[in-house]
Image (cartoon, one colour):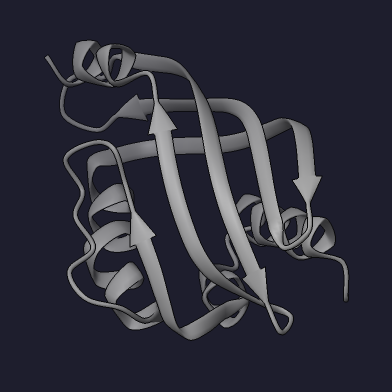
Length: 127
């Protein structure tokens, strides 16, 4: 996997099979992770992503998936467009939200992530 798009595809594949450790293993030790909703990753590194995003996400949603539908790449930057689908564990409501993820891959590792998502669709499922 030397191609940035292949590395990003692998991240989604690992998440879809429940391999969170494998997904974290694709990250640079000093990864910068920015989300656009209520989960906050404080500091840098895969362990911070696990604490600030993966654990609370899995606790809040009884099921969820991220399905990329398109990849756009230029150099070490990959943009993935896709769909977040989830069922909120408290309300039982389903969310279908479109997203755009912007990834930066350096030296074969994910170095930066920025998320843009339909926050209204997420908020409606949480109410």
